[in-house]
Amino acid sequence: MHTEMDQEFWDRRYAEHRRVWSGNPNPHLVTTASALPPGRALDVGCGEGADALWLARSGWRVTGVDISEVALGRAREQARLEDTAVAARVDWVHADLLEAPPEPGGFDLVSAQFMQLAEPARSALFSGLAEAVAPGGTLLIVGHHLSDLQTTVRRPPLPELFYTAEDLIPLLDGGWDITACEARPRSVADTEGHQATIHDTVLQARRHGPSHAQAPSAAGPV
Image (cartoon, rainbow, N blue to C red; front, side, top):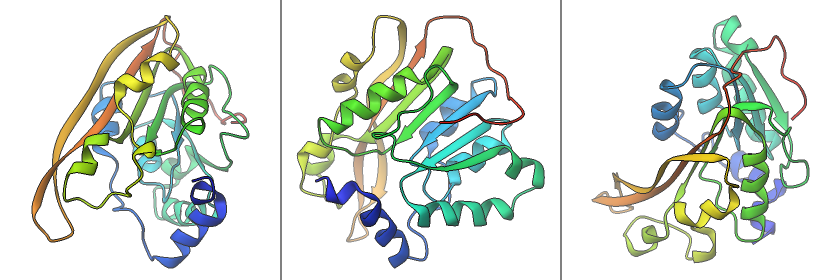
């Protein structure tokens, strides 16, 4: 399990494919962030940069973090195609957030999209991400739901990588309002090209306290 999640694995995966992801922002992030005032965002596992750049176009100051140098190289290349002002709103950071957790209370939005880690790494990562949310800020965690293993969509036969939103609630202290805790259905094509219904684990929570959302001139350390 741990070797699959290390930098060598992800660098190799990105190097073997011209593009790994669609290039489109994750829809649950778009829905959530569109309802928030822009501030400082942390995009966890930013990959080729689609989410971070969408946030920057929407006025957010973004720190995009990934364990893969190859992925970050592609994200930087994509950023060069953007308007200069948009590109300047993103800082790309190479880091393993299990080894170096993000700045506590430093972000108005923390987004983790499909970070499929086994325990205890999953709880360690998500606990650190919750700590990184500023008062009044939002935590958004989206993952593959365990029920996906019963569908015809390709998923690794490793149930320890899958989780429900309810599994994540104990990682939060009492200072949160839970605004979404569910398995959201969506339709996708399976390996045979047939439509199948899968479910995304979605946990969205707002930390108690007044929002201090703002877009500083430069992002501090993660």
